[in-house]
Length: 387
Image (cartoon, rainbow, N blue to C red; front, side):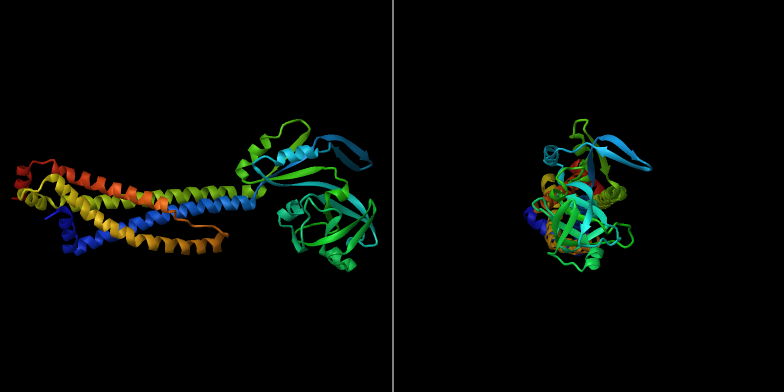
């Protein structure tokens, strides 16, 4: 009778023990597969959240002088070179930027919501990256954002629209500086936050093309210091803007550590239980080993039989665990999307193959270790233990 047949007969003639070991293999395999999938999903979610929350730094020119006029003080800053802006924006850590200049403009033919004759005009290269919009204080209710290709366009507040019965596509004129802009967007402000609804967002050309400040946004908040360190020279001042990311950084790190610790603990406990059960399974078969040796079967064949018996059950567990794992991953992905937004729970085939190979290696080592005390005995010693 060959080794494989004896292994199959042993598994089928002891259904209770075989089923117990099969279920243990299935549980451990599912636990390992889902644990690594969850860890990968948590890391991806954390990375996605970092990109969503983001971080930025503000570039300004060096202060030049302070003008005092009674109780009013104003500070002049050195201008920012467009060439420097482009050079900084080309760094791999930078995903977007918004160059800005703010001035006052006199209304010509319309009324500011405050009733004042002049209001703030904020020139932007990319209004979507203006701090008011990125912080959530402002939302674009209608129309579109300003881009670098735009000229003489504006985004105005809902209050300004209602005050003057304006619509998208209408024109606004200023007497000082003399210019006319086309309304391409309407914004609304968070009522719980203070914001000057007189503010009109325009393209940078409308306010003169000179740059007062630039907000640079990084792909990953952890790369903020690297991006800032690339900027050399004494002409500019830098200010990091990480308040939003700092608020979640500790929680992200804690979640990552807890997930890793729980996975390691779960796998360690599972491996320990598996080793103990396999050791009991092999060492409880001293009598059977003695009989096999008595009928002329070598120790290597006996070891091979033990390994085949276990591997047959492990193979069955793998076949069942694969579809179950992918189905569980799909459900967990739906849960994560509801909790923290879009993310992916992936189980790459390469990772699964490596995991199964590692589990098989652990099983073989466990059988060899458990059977060594028996196999190192001489045939007479094993037979003597049977009596």
